[in-house]
Length: 217
Image (cartoon, rainbow, N blue to C red; front, top):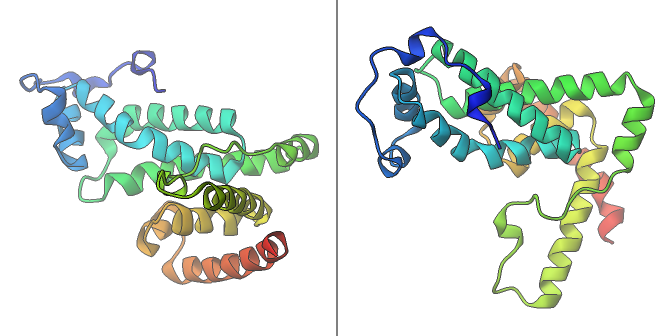
C-alpha cells in the first residue's frame, strides 16, 4: 500500500551503504536489525517494515476510526512519517511501539477533527464495517458452517459495540483486546501512565459488556 517513491530519503539514510541483502535475509532479521539496515542505506529494508506492519496498522486504525478508506490514508501517512523520521528513533525502544504511537496519534487526531463536524461524524457512524478486517482466527476452515455463521454474526456485533465506546476508551480497548498490546506499550502509544491505562481499560470493558449484552441475547 505504501509507495516508497513518494518520499525522498533523508541525508544520512543514503550514507555508507551496506552490501545488498536478499529479501529472504532481510525477512529473517529482527525489527531493530531491519531499522539499522535501512539507516545504513539499504532501501529494501524499509519495504520489509512496510510488509510487516501495513496490515496490522490498517486493522488497528480501521477499528479505531471506523472508515476503511480514511484508515488507509492514515496508515500511508504513518509510513511517510516513519520514513522521514526514522533517524530520530530511539533504538533502545521497541519499533512496534513507536510506529503504533504514530498511527494512534493520527487516529486520535482524525476522531478529534471529525467530532467538530457533526455531519461527517453522523455519516461515518452510519457506515457498515467490512466483514474482512478481522484477524484470521475469526475464520477457521475447520469450523462447521453454522458455527462460522455465528462467529461472523458475533464479529459484527463486536464491531458495533466498539464503535459506541468513547474515543479514549475505544483506543485502549482496541489496543489491548483486539491488537494484544501490553499495558506498557499502550501507555507509550497513548502517552498516559499505567494507572490511567488500566482504569480506562476497565471502564472500556465494562462499557463494552453493557453495550454488547443486548446485541447477543
